Amino acid sequence: MTETGLPVGRIPVIRLPATPADANKGGSIFGGWIMSQVDIAGSIPAEVVAKGSIVTRAVDSFEFKSPVFAGDLVSCYAEITHIGRTSVKVMVDVYAQRRRGDQIETIMVTEASLVYVAIDQQGRPRAIPKD
Image (tube, rainbow, N blue to C red; front, side):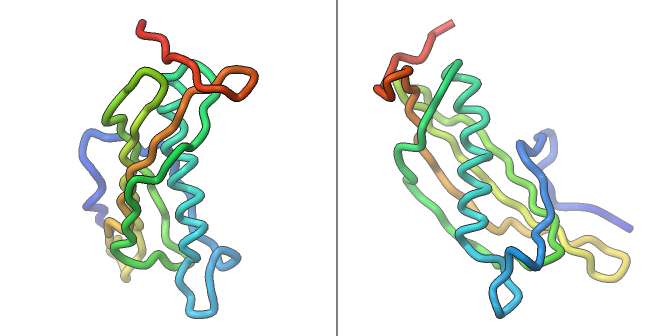
């Protein structure tokens, strides 16, 4: 069995299987399920940088490049692209791996850019610590 195509030198923020429960009648995974995983993946580094609570403010871009199917192993990679005074911009790349005989096919299935805002206990934007 060979495994190629995942980004070299990067570690996925989350990795999980797409299950039949996540699929539509055609057998592909609902876009909303993928969007949810992307938001979770993006929020992880954003929350670390913000050193506290964050909320999703915007989805700047979201492109479904190829379908995901039940049985695929989905890997989400998140990278901070900008840190503002109260916001963090994160790029998320999603790959699906599926078995083809004794081979594993790897496909980039989604790219997204999201913005998160650090919030205080009252839910208002707060400055991100600079340390």
